[in-house]
Image (cartoon, rainbow, N blue to C red; front, side, top):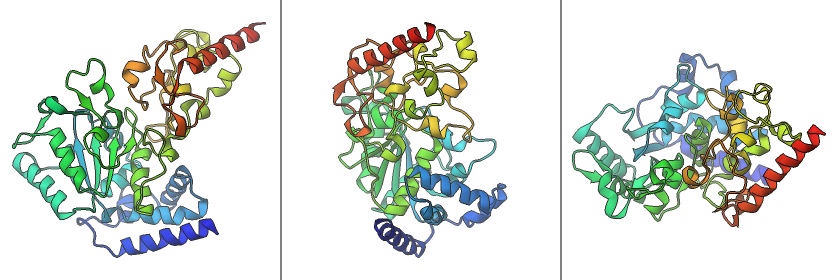
Length: 378
């Protein structure tokens, strides 16, 4: 009965949204997918995967598919702050576009510095018009850390010389939903690494409105598009963890679903890159993998059309979706082990991260690695 009530509510929302005007003159999404070699069957398989990703029952698959078909009803403003554009590249640079990237292309992007044709005064005008014309209706996505306070001038944008922080505040004030895309926008990222000369801050420190963090360096395309679809479906913010990350994407550790987890439990570890253990796919903990301390779904969703991810390719997780990872997770090719600092409790749920010292957990994991390896050698 609970799921039926939710199904009815989402159906009503999508019906109402379908009557709203389109933004832009895009072809129907079915035609766009067909032109790119994606069959209806493939599209529905993708929708089923996203349904599972969002922790919804399989019976909701048609609703997820319909939400994807209605992405042209929601205008999106995407701002670039201090960043490398890697988060946009996660979606846009593909020799064989995925359904996720095609869906993102189909979204009514009213402003995106990387992909729009306008520049200079025209670009500035487009941003101002989007904020004014779609007030209270657009989704704001921000990529990159933001120099703040007396350092705002380090990021000066456009012909009017506005600071990035000013752009972000103005856009956030009228947004229906706000997403910090990537670790730099979510937590400051490498821009905020010590000594943080530009005083780079996460988006949440620039606006007092609720911000949904979608960290990763970069986040997977599914985590970006999935959040858009969640908003279209529900019209509300998803359930969030202690760091305002959506639980459906960041509710479990990399370690929990890693294909090398069995090797960890069996005490089979790579001792140095290139050794026999590395060739056999042993656990990468002893060469620095931070998977036990990192909340993300990389081990399940992967990258590059679900082809691979860093651990599968042979390098440990560097913890890039965690706050202050650049300072606190390094050195990246050494185990965290006995390094004391206040961060996450790796054996906690995502609800409780940030409330305990990691030291005891790191020692416990290091001890397990040593004991299990010793037992294996007996």
